[in-house]
Image (cartoon, rainbow, N blue to C red):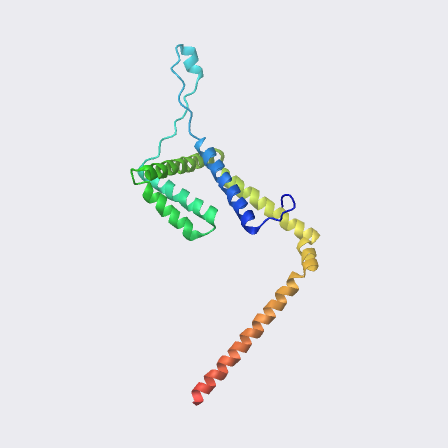
Length: 198
C-alpha cells in the first residue's frame, strides 16, 4: 500500500500484468540481441586476415519457420499474459495467419515469427554446443536426491505435517467423501428398488 491507502485487487492485478509485460518485452529484446554481428570489413594485410576468424552468420528463417515461430510466440504470449490456453491458441492462430499477410499486421507477425525462430535456433545451437539438457537433468536429479535425503534424515515433511495437521485434514476429507458416496449409493439403491416394485 502506498501512503496508507490499501491496494485494491484490480491495482495489484494491473501491476502484475505490467510486470509480466515488461519481462516479456525484456525477453524479446534479449532474443533479438542474439542476431549474429555483421561481418568485419575487408582487411588489407594477410596477417590481419589470418588472425580474424570469420563470424558465423545465422541463416534468416524462411516461410514455414516464420509462421511456426509466430504461432509459438502468440501461444506463449497468450498463455503468459492471460493464463488461459484458449487465449493462447487464439493468439497463436492469429499470428500464424498474420505471418502470411503482406500488410502492417503481417509485417509485425513476420518479425515476431523471425525473432522466435532465431531464438529457437540459437537455443538448439547452445544446447548442441554445451549439452545443456543433460546437464540440467543431472542437476535436477541431484537436487531432488539431496532434498529427499534431507527429508529422510531430518523428517522435515513430518514436522510440517505435525504443525499444520495436513494428514488429519486429508483423513477427515476422505472420510466425508466416503460418507457422501455411501449415502448417495444407498439412496440410489432405494430408488432402484422402489422403481422395480412400482
